[in-house]
Image (cartoon, helix red, strand yellow):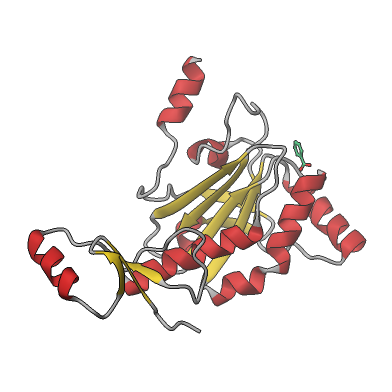
Length: 221
Ligand code: BEZ
């Protein structure tokens, strides 16, 4: 119980600086802050190499890598496996399915990075990382975190959807409603003062349910 409390206390949260680290990966030694090169980073963990759900998930990341690149985003995976296991698994997946897991995968045998990011959740597993996804912005801030258990795979459409939503929100200073996807209307941030409320009531440039719920088109293509 005590161990669990300590580990929970150091779990990074939304808005925190992404803890920096150096790690051994399938692309050699790297440091997160240098790897990022001013881009977004999606850092994700999987429980173990040579397991079925993980194989579908990492193949999913590899197949859609170009979509992440189009969103100025680099991918980096992690599991508590050796570099030899990673290399053998990457080669096996390529031989069996033709999919090449060509983004770096951290070999986190000492669990250093998994612990740093709260990927090790002892009541789920003491030795395998849960399925975590950290969305890290170009300023190396954590912007969104997903945690999935060992037995349920993630949804790649959702991972790409929220990445794009974060970027659209930043660029246009808007919020994104339920199930938002590119092309949908966005939410104009609600007024924070009476003066802003009066302005919004008079504002005909957006579609209003009321002053606090207003939508507009961004005309993104
Ligand atoms: C899997 O990827 O299939 C898996 C890995 C660890 C535990 C359960 C399932």
